[in-house]
Amino acid sequence: MRLYWLVGILVLSQFSFAATKSHSRVNQADGILPVTTHSAQARKMFEHGVEKMEYLRRSEALEGLRAAVKADPKFVQAHILISHLSRDAGEQQTSLARAEEFVGEVTPGERLLVTWLGGVQEEKEVPAIAAMNDLLTQYPKDKWLQFLAGRWLLNQGRYEQSIMILQRAVSIDADYPAAWNELAYAYAWSGNFDKAFSAMDRYVALAPDEPNPHDSYGEILRLAGKFDAALEQYRASIRVDPGFGSEAGVADTLAVMGKEEEAREEYERAIVFAGGETEKIEYELQSALTWVREDSRRQAEHALRDVAKHAHKAGSGRLEAEAHRVLAIVEPDFKDSMKQLEAAKAALDDHPSSASDHDEELSRILRVQALRASEAQSADIANAAVQQLEKMAASNRDQVIQRSFHGATGAVLVAQGKYAEAVPELQEDSEDPISMRLLWRAYSSTGANGEAQMMADKLANFNIPSFEQALVVPQFRASMVSQAH
Image (cartoon, rainbow, N blue to C red; front, side, top):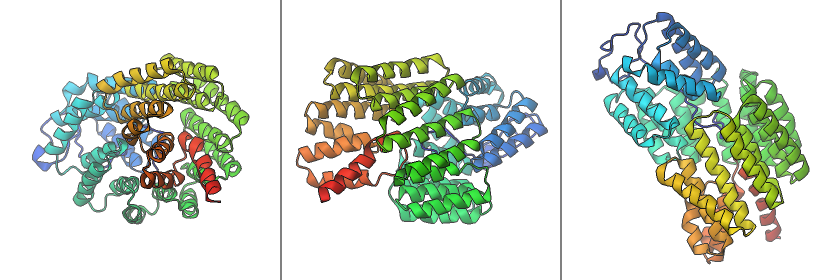
């Protein structure tokens, strides 16, 4: 399972544990990061939480970690992991603050861990990356650290680096299931599906009684366009554990297949098994996107407004902002579109969130503002959005912000007919369907027909059930079929 709309979910392996607070309890020469806790009960609950996290059993993992910090309120690693796993913005901030409050009482390695993971949330990327590198150097035999670094790099879109580090994890322990899961995704995102399938076969063999291997296999098969096989894997996951939530995978697959009515029925089933309000809202948002794929604007607007209301009531500024951002694209009237973007910005400011979540979503909002304004030939508004993104990108190397800046810049240049200048900007955002379509147009307009065909093929086979896919891909596929005839 790798829910594409989530950020910062961490899946962890086993740690080296000790029941005392002595910093010398684990020799660094052993190559394993120690864990500081004074409570045997806290350690037991922590181990339970980590075990559940390995297989994406989020609710159970959080139960274990929360019990750990209840037994030991100064349990730094439990706090920092809660801050990354929780979907509640308030809990994220509180747990991070607790980890930072007690960080002086743990080992130097654990302090580096907090600097790394906390820095990612607080947009202190330079010290965060430095801490990650130091950890990998100091604890070369720790498969968890190799795994965690590989996963973070994967989430950043640095696939080659991710593969290299995840391969280290499985070289330390060839039977390490969670690392095989992430390695399969890294291969898939790199376009090497043969290796991705091989890694998934290994993952399933290592954990045949868990639902997540089948769920992950289904997602990678969907990425490869093997929809029937993907549905088989998702349904195998449901048979293993009906409460795991793989109905969402079935729904997502049906959605990208164009079976939107069936997808909506499956999203309703997924909502029943959702682990909390945030997850329910996410599934409601995915269901709303089925109307976008069907080009049913009124139904889409109605569903998206309901999502925004639910998110507002639940206190999820990120999801409320996302619903308004999608409405801003769907809305045909430019002025009404801008009002939706203002509502999205207000939602972000009205609810607590981490600095990274806030700024990433803000960058997406500004990108839509630049896109819609450039299409409406409102140069002042478009340029203002790009300038704000440029400032954000200059001070923050977050990949979402960087891609938003380049995608917005490219969109404005295409609207101005400056296709050659747009190409390098859009190439920096070539995993987003909106930028992919613009890049295809720019290639075609500059006579780069070979590149245009490659981009057309890539876009037509884009199978991530995101909003951008819903907006662009079905119509693009239909236009390609029409041109072929």
